[in-house]
Length: 275
Image 1 (spheres, rainbow, N blue to C red):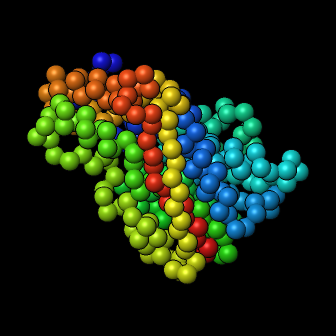
Image 2 (cartoon, rainbow, N blue to C red):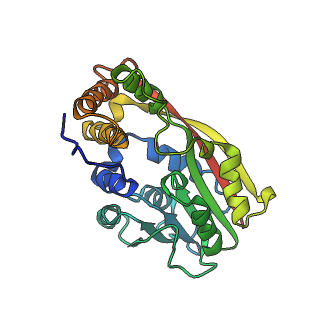
């Protein structure tokens, strides 16, 4: 096993720092999620638009926005992320030279009230400790009449075979839920974050799509990163031998050559909220 320190603890910030240079190696999932979300935008993005790419990762949504923009009609884009390594990836990404990229906490945005015409937050709510604070910041920084676009998974396809792998090593292990609380994985919970932040209920719309992830589309280093993350979530309750066995079993199940299937599905919510 590629060593996971025995005292390693799972940290979302460290997880995304580690993902930064290999973010595109998780297959087309981020592009499909971001593209599907942006397709729901009811107000076209133009040169007069001021867009916030919130918790931007390596700039997927910024790239998708600019790809669709006419050369003479490009918006102003601010891309922020808590991970310095993600922001470094944005700054060196071709085509994003004019994006204003900055390290910033989504729960404490440095922007004034009523700044943005569009606020894009793709897969952000499940990665924050205080989603209510995050959503209030989205509402606060959005101009009246502006549009918030947000996406998140409500089912994680990899959890099923991860649970099977855990039970193979430790048959008495409790159910594995992953890093996101079960109550967060519902339409009502997601919509209520925005309603409670100040958006009118009738101005919040949620739809669902399914995104397929093929094992063959995931880079080997990404498989290793995900498997290490699961092992670290077990830190303190598993022996070194069991942790190593779990890592090897997870890697087998993620590998297209040895897996019992060809991939997994993520049920994904797409939310549009008008201020």
